[in-house]
Length: 359
Image (cartoon, rainbow, N blue to C red; front, side, top):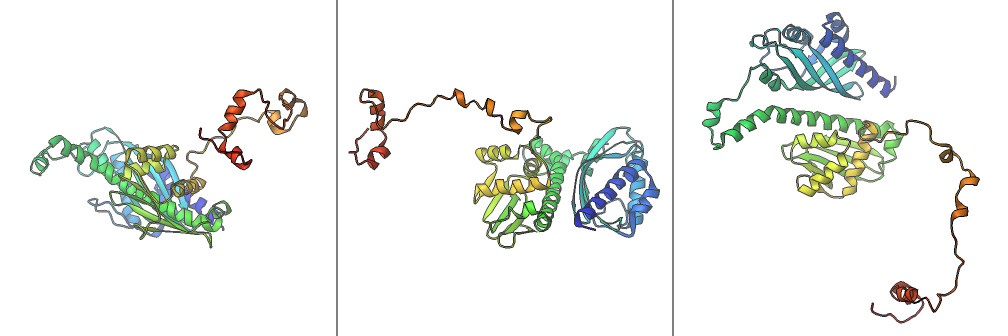
């Protein structure tokens, strides 16, 4: 089985788990999809769930009891061999007790990004993060402590509360960007081995880095001689070409936007986005990523092109309407304006040995 078939099979297994197990509560499908030696590498703190198959089944059951109509909308998936990254939003109604909070019957939603490894049709590993702070806020389970804010050193109460309220989204964007850059890095490295159109673009040896002021960074190393791409976390030393953002949220917006070029230009103009090295490397790098994720590509024509664009018709080429004046060896001495303009063409006068005049 080739690499693409493995990735497609893995994506189908993960999608089936999201739609049938999490969304419909079909736990007979759960037993079919999850390996007996499954490991959850990012169990949710405070839930008491074990990081194994029994623990994740207990978690799924617990969530469906708290939110009986629990379901997800998958926004996108990326596969790197047997690992699948999924960005999705969960929806539901709080009709059961959740983490000690009595039912509020409120509609809720929260975002999640996770990576699952699939081997031989079974899910064997899981890494992920969900915006649970947002969920807790929606059901009244967490609010900023006014006393804690007042006892701090921040003199502006409103600014402090705004900062606390924004923490869940900052945490989510930070985690989302790390997963996005990791997946993008692995996919580019894989593509440089198996996709000719990507290999043909790797003609220079250079290092490219994307980083943020809140601590996220990933680097790519392009080997023009071997036409290979490798990647690693952290900042490169030294960095020959880099794109630096003020925050993870700003980086996510640019990476996932079809108008990334305009957003980068606006950021440079306002001093929030910084480029080190060659500007061409930024556009070249984003062009490579769009070979893997079709974001921002212009749609082709919806219908067939008109016949004149498909084959030449000598009867309608329009050449008979073009006025061609006869060639002349020198300007008419009476054409005063033409001679005045010619006197300003220093290149012409210099090559013919005429004296140079100041104009």
